[in-house]
Image (cartoon, rainbow, N blue to C red):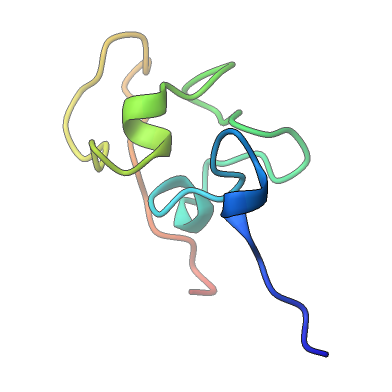
Length: 68
């Protein structure tokens, strides 16, 4: 049986449609990146693509990972 990522098994999504592909995400700590100690759910859940300033981001915004 193939490995499948199932976000339905969790209260919140473990993988973000935005952050999972950002070079600033910390893959070792869930919902953490260079911009946020705890990535806001609005960004994590993909309702905000974080291409514009967001309160508390310190000027760090989404940048696509080089290997994607």
